[in-house]
Image 1 (cartoon, rainbow, N blue to C red):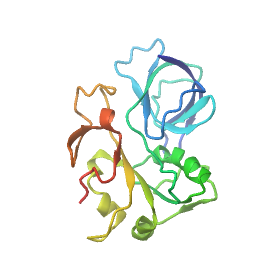
Image 2: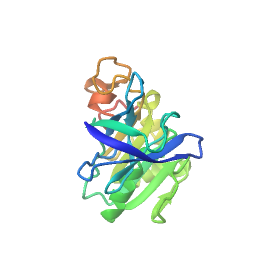
Image 3: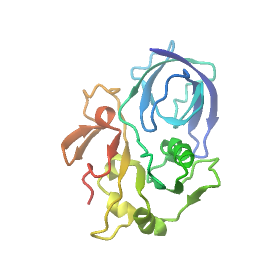
Image 4: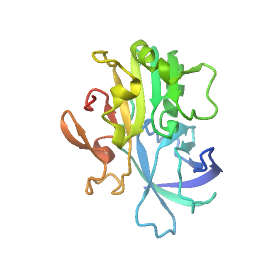
Length: 226
């Protein structure tokens, strides 16, 4: 168990609650991994998954939304990290990030890592996260096919209901090769990584997988793309 504290809260442009929590300096969840949080003294029946949107030495910015009942100064008990996260290959020099959900913050930790290894970086998002470095090229929807061909690594975030629609979302014509990459599947995980409820089940080329335990980040070519 890890004891943490809420140190910042704010309303996002989408009117959701975002925030930042303290984090031990030796704890480094990978982009796409998550921790399970319980607020001290609360009677909430289920833990809240916290995904990193940014990591500093002793704090973690969290992907929104956070519960409306949380307040600055509240103490949290954390467990984890859980799940499989993104792994940006060190040789990658042309990186495409594409968010087809409503929370591009899932991909935000990859931006710093890609720039640190001198990769050229392009981002597609209907709602780009604030504070993007000038080196990140924002691309329009019509540029997605060419950008997917250009990239040597592709990271996607999308809802569970669209997990098999990668080719359509990228606007790739039939026969166009997909680059190496990974997909974060956004879904509810009410059982908190125990894999007991099956709500987050995803069908893959290797059978049914659970996002809370086997994901939420999956190899792009493992997902049944159409």
